Every structure is written in structure tokens, then in C-alpha cells.
Image (cartoon, one colour):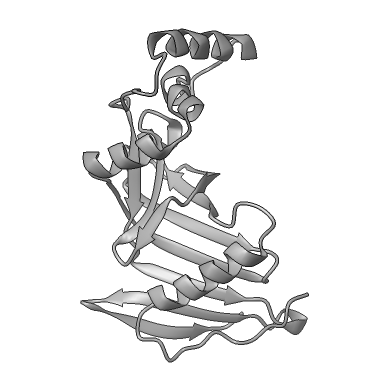
Amino acid sequence: MPETSTVATTASEPFSLFRDWFAEAMQSEPKDANAMTLATSTQDGFPSARIVLLKDWDEHGFVFYTNKDSRKGSELRENPHAALLFHWKSLGRQVRIEGPATGVSDAEADAYYASRPRISRLGAWASIQSRPLSERAELERRLAEFEARYPGDDIPRPAYWSGFRIVPSRLEFWQDMPFRLHDRTAFTRDGAGWAVTKIFP
């Protein structure tokens, strides 16, 4: 069990704390420290959640990429509000993030898409994400078709494949403590700044 300590509350904004925690998680988590649960819901309020990977972040928001016609993409069009959750078990920490979702620019999407391995880029063409799949062989056939269509490294980004940025209006930092007396600190956007609040466990 890692040594635990309370969350520093001297910071007036949450991003320096997230940067420190994320850097520690990148060193301590055995795999995918950038994995985060993304929760979305339909316009009628029916929720769904899944794990996605954080690909970029700064004070403007937290970015992941997907097929915009997938279930999560469709739900974000219907209801452009989302929540993220990082759980770093090795550190006994969680970070919760809530806020509206916006699309990344075409330039951002192009740059990230170009950085992906070739088969991953082809997979964006081959997978009709979230649609029924008759058998695994169907996906493999579609992948082979796009491998033949784009035999080299010049593979354009599909128009339906891009990124979303969750713009935080609230972040909560949770630190495991003995006897379930956990330490919780919330940052809530307050005009141009942030209000900082301690929360009962």
C-alpha cells in the first residue's frame, strides 16, 4: 500500500495538482495510466460508461478520440455533457472531472491520427464502431479491404473519426486514507478562477 497523504489545498487551480498526480501514475501504474472512464447519457438521461484513453490535456480540457458515430459520439451530440474518472489503484487515488464536451479541431485530429500505428489508422476505416458485427471474420475482411485500398503509409483520416475535449467545470481529487476516512478536494469553476472545497468522505 503506498504511503498516503492529504491533498494539498494551497493550489488555486487544479491543473498543477493533476499534472503531479498524472506524472506519478505514469510511473506507478502497471498499464495505461491514461485510461479513464467516460460517462455519457442520452438526451433522455439514460447513462452509459466505458474506458477510453486520454490523449492530450491542458487547462482547456481533456481529449480522447473516437468514431463520432459510435454510441458515445452519438450521445455526446444529443447531450454534450460528460464525466471522466481516473482510478490509479497503485496510488490509491481517483480524479473525477465533469464538464461540457466540444469537438477538437480538424488540425488536432489530423495530427493525432497521423501519429497512430498504420493498422490502427486502417482500423478506424474498418470498424463501424458500435454497430452489430456478425462475426470476427467480418472485421478482418474489412481490414483487409482497406489495407488493399491504402497499401502505403498515406492513409487519410475518416471524416467521422475525430476527438472530443471535455472542458472541466468541476474536478475532484480523492486520496485513499485509513479506515475509509478518505481525503476529498473539489475545484469548481468560479468565473475566471476556481473555488476550492474540502468534502466529507
